[in-house]
Length: 99
Length: 134
Image (cartoon, rainbow over all chains, first blue to last red):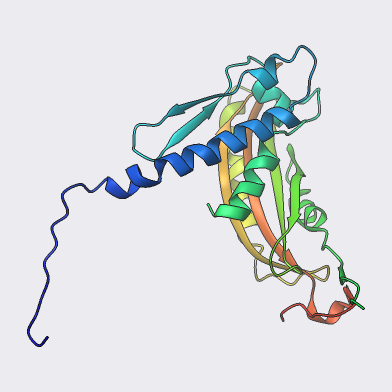
């Protein structure tokens, strides 16, 4: 129709993030599960310590592990070699879903 | 009857990065992840770079940070440089450099990078059908 126009008003700028949040949560779940499966095991505390909490913005999820030697196991130190278990999972996720 | 899948040589990106960093004191690097992408002649290699400085130095933290930044600039400048072992198409700094001292207090900055690499077209790195891009 000539001269027809449509006007849209954005009522919620965060609507897109809210809509995809469940799918992003599912991705985070998969990453945490895979990292836990790859984690070196002695007592099992490292593998069992993964937790997922919502971030400040909709559609963001934080994967955390409070185990006290998490960083040194993942990244190594001068005296012990790194045993990466989360890094390879994140690298594969970046390759699959983008950064 | 189906054709056999082509076997594509994976360039040794870890060795190329180390060749460019080994002159930096206190700097080490290693590949912690690698994978084949689509198209299959492209690989993703993830490397970790640690930059350290002696504990006894009063400005050890600042020195480690300087070394980490120098390493970062070298790595980010690798795409486009002539590499006989392959082609390093892109570098992404995915993490750091950030402060992560060793368990004995040694000053250290840690960083991780994703590299996109593929064989050179003239390398004969393919065994079978298909060709890498130039």
